[in-house]
Length: 288
Image 1 (tube, helix red, strand yellow):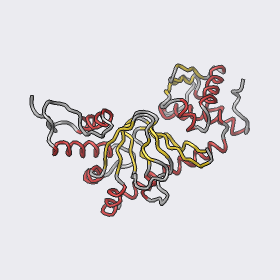
Image 2 (cartoon, rainbow, N blue to C red):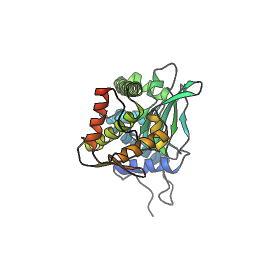
Image 3 (cartoon, rainbow, N blue to C red):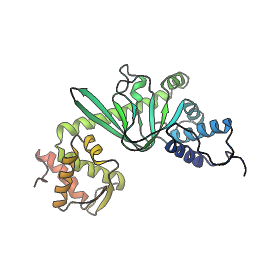
Image 4 (cartoon, helix red, strand yellow):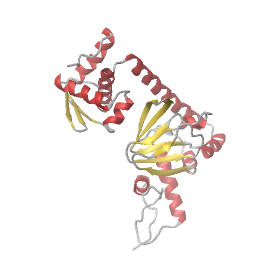
């Protein structure tokens, strides 16, 4: 049998890399694909090319030149975090930042005295922890995998050194932090201006729009991207209240539930309920 070579498309190399992250939480770069172990130079080349491919297809670094992506890849490490494990803690200053290849990560900010808030649930393609690059207080919260998760972690020291040579990377970080600020502003508005049931319905409508482009009168199916209790925490409520709201929407003939699959029977009507709630400043009419 011939030795393993790198005569593969970039996409195939990336597939090998992500499978390696999933298969080995000791951060193995390459699974064994033949009886002959690959040379160290082949491993290093595969790692750098695969990581550069993933970075280039992320919103954070999309549009950067190949040589810049390879430079970032040189200070980036792939890793795998089983469900329930912690990526970094609130206040960590030396972690750098991570980009998700698969899975989901919950960012939780602890305010003390047993109080806290889920700031966001990050999913594949999103990056988290960029604020630690410029913030003296470190990471904004604790990041914990809520599903088996593969990530690329960019070294803080390595990236800051690279930033001095490639200042255009600063714009990437500014755009990422602007998106985070926008997300936090939306979260504050939701928690302060919308009641719990409105937040749940708004999430259903937004997911419908994200997948199908517009809310029509025809049914559309969406799937819960994470466990119910995780999504409920992100919406600022409990899993019990989330389930009760779904049950009341079922009674109104607006929703069907089959495990994690939700069918919005009339998305346009749900969107009108949200608008009417703001127009009248009244709670959504879903209480039994």
